[in-house]
Image (cartoon, helix red, strand yellow):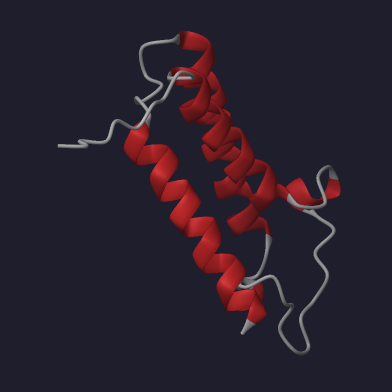
Length: 103
């Protein structure tokens, strides 16, 4: 149950960042950062066997430790990918304010 809560919180926060930020396509650095995040994430998925892929932070039973591909260089490339992508979105609009209508 705890792992499901963490995944829900993660996707909720990612959704809020994307919703209240600008797409980082106008800034070459931020676009490159987002592109790098996508490449790392895709490489991570291709490097692991699909039966090892799990969205929750608990390994599957009989899971195999992957040490090839991107996993040779980065132990947690999926988390790295998410952090880089969300950084690009946050840096695209660092002054996000949520306005409330108090009327």
